[in-house]
Length: 422
Image (cartoon, rainbow, N blue to C red; front, side, top):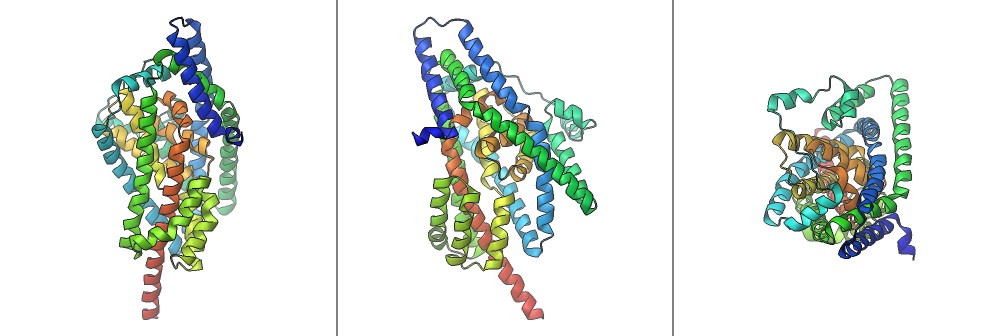
């Protein structure tokens, strides 16, 4: 029974009950006309309650996140090199995700009937066609002449750009004003998270209503698409884990076998806790004992990486949105893909440390807005996120330790050069 006490388990149970219950009722051939409409309405109200927090939460988190990165960069050259490596890896992961996920979906497409059942149940079969604009119009739209209008219309990339300008401007203010503004937006973010947690308390009801609608309209046909989603996102996170071994070997001087043995304990803890923060003590001990990283490097880089770096974030989040586009029959334009990549990069830094269910919606909804993908599928995907989330955490922990080995080697080189020139 303790398993059913967790929100993830309750949401997954609600999804299964809704799907099976809806399919059984649909199988009788006597579905009251009002039932799917009522269930859709309940689910839509719950989804709307989540959606109303996205814009203020993302804006506030960006301001606080940029301030945290700015503070970290003042901690010295090691911290600056860490931020540089984080940025390079996140940017590389973003680009490779588009290539890898598109290739995977082309090679292993979602069954058309299953995709249609998923879309019909989640959106009623109505998916808005993405708007096509030329490059000049897209470039002009990046700078919001009216940030409030951009927020009201869910124009997420212009809003993110304004938020970044604002956040960097805040870091240039006198300390008293800067601290005051950062505390204000930190409080706004905390308040939004409280609202999201309240809404998530009703997640089993909301997901049950949406799953019931899905079962009534498409039976159990959508289960294949959901399974495909779990495999796709999990595979992306596993790819992050695998790429960390050659990274540690090429740039950190630690062979793949040694690195694998060294990080295995931290990976097991990450797998069981699904928390990078909860794994931090084991990561520090692993870096010191198994990888030979000195205290001053492990003590700075690992807490910093847990605070601002999640390598699986752009990988998994973009995979989710590309999956939604795939099953919805949406082909994003190059401009939309660039916008989604930039938003995924920014959100990956700003949403670190949020609870899993909060992070899922807050991180992915803005990318959906940027890509023109419907967000109605997110609650159903959230219900099965418990499996990919395990691999997200393992990937993040492995990446944190890989970057630590790289920075340790760089730090040794810097110290050697400094001693020779002294």
